[in-house]
Length: 173
Image 1: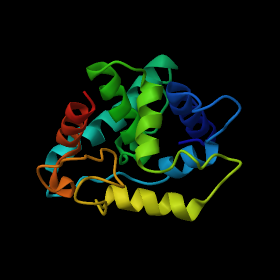
Image 2: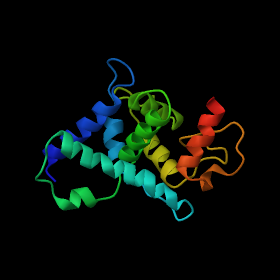
Image 3: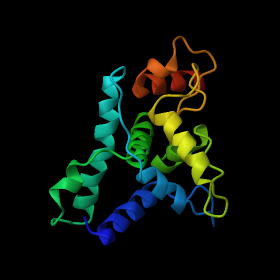
């Protein structure tokens, strides 16, 4: 994959979610989230669906930009954390009111990453949040993850993301 196409793809992903606030950029955050692979664990095999949602964004990008000469390996590589988050935000916007961008930034806020703009940066803190998410090292109630609950009925580290999301939506309503 050419570096130019990689950059165009990252810009396109960023355009899907927009800026969190006017005159605040999060390019470093986007790049870091895009540099890490999202994995689904044996305990939550249905999280493969979140992985697939993320990978599907590449095909959407190709269609929208009429890109045809793409290395097959690029299409088959693993889903990045950024892709999974954008794909999940897209699902949330379909299931509930709100835009992809508003849900994406809501998820980023739940991870504790909103404050890390290009002007205020901590690569180490972001890496820790990514590790916590990917390896499900957040709390029993989901704190530190994407969907913290006030009254969890089970250990959220062992619940697939879709069902975490449903419990979170029920608590929000």
